[in-house]
Image 1 (cartoon, rainbow, N blue to C red):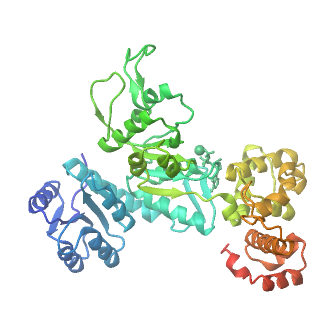
Image 2 (tube, rainbow, N blue to C red):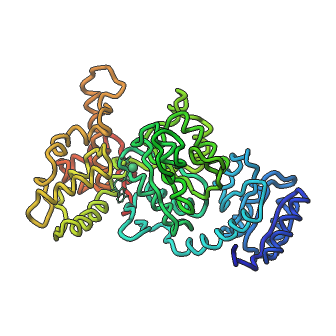
Image 3 (tube, protein in one colour):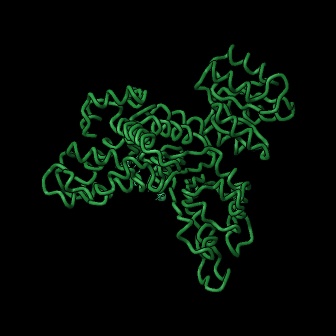
Length: 474
Ligand SMILES: Nc1ncnc2c1ncn2[C@@H]1O[C@H](COP(=O)(O)OP(=O)(O)OP(=O)(O)O)[C@@H](O)[C@H]1O
Ligand SMILES: [Mg+2]
């Protein structure tokens, strides 16, 4: 049981029985509750009593509902910890509430344990928020582990990771292969109050279908032919921590049903076991599949998607944040200097230009492989173009104008073979890509595209391209 006492807690709830019993429980736990019977009264109370620590807000109330009240409370005091109380069927409200700044939601029926848990978390997480830099260009979360990047898209991801670290909701991480999904899953875990608990990763695509249930939930001895000893499941291993379900888009229909039940009931049953056991595990899942499409063709359950995807994180492909490449390369050089016991100083300008204009279908993992390859090939202490894999340089022309492999930017949907029009389209697209790669800097773009500055400026004028649109704060 918790030693936490003495918090000033405001309960905003229209149901009198619930309101009074929640206050009685809080008082009994050693806190100082106050109550209001609708959102408007709650706001008045907060205005008059700025020292409230935590608010419990019901969603459906007359006069001013919980979400409206939440918005106003956050205006008065953005740091005030607010929990939304919601019926289990109203997960939609919980999602809205969290988007509006609720710290987390608590499902009805309330219990002393749920309340105590919530209060405990609000305190640890608040201390954590203080410790986390807000828009750091890199997010350090464990020894030797950082997520690098300062493009606006990745900084947004840092911000979401920080928010997600404070709540208990399931998270679904989406992104192409190699974009850092597992890294982000770890960051969420190690930034959360569960950081001292285990982080258990399961690759759902790598486990044969007939074994996955026992892998996740465990089995009793003799539960089925071949079950000669008791097996502990990943859920049990992850107790008190985070379970990372990688490649969730690959699980079978039968497993989807079982997982949905666990998410709803927060209980698991081992195979051959006869009782359900409560589980305290946070689920973070990841996929590079298009789940909306899988839902449409009925290979993925919509209700499960909904439960997993309460707060989504979408990781941008590397080609959409090329401005992060120099920092990533520096980070990797340092990393491989350590593992390969080398003293590589930097990367040559031209070699970096190749990396900045390549399309990176394999994203950051591919970049990592390229740098490691260069470490092996390069004898000097500067990575030169010659040390880059040949395919990267060969594909250079195609990839720098092509975006993702296979998408046809030059011709696009155009079927007309109109040379002057297509030439202009190509030129325009080429210049935009180059500007993006060099952060809108005219001199650098001209130099690396082997155009004169005058030609480049003329073309910018001709195509009405504003290079400032491609500059990124660095
Ligand atoms: N922003 C980043 N900063 C530093 N390293 C990164 C970053 N993103 C990814 N990496 C590194 O790139 C590699 C691939 O990342 P990770 O395994 O997390 O990707 P993934 O999305 O899970 O890939 P897959 O879909 O193939 O499983 C890892 O070595 C990871 O440490
Ligand atoms: Mg992965």
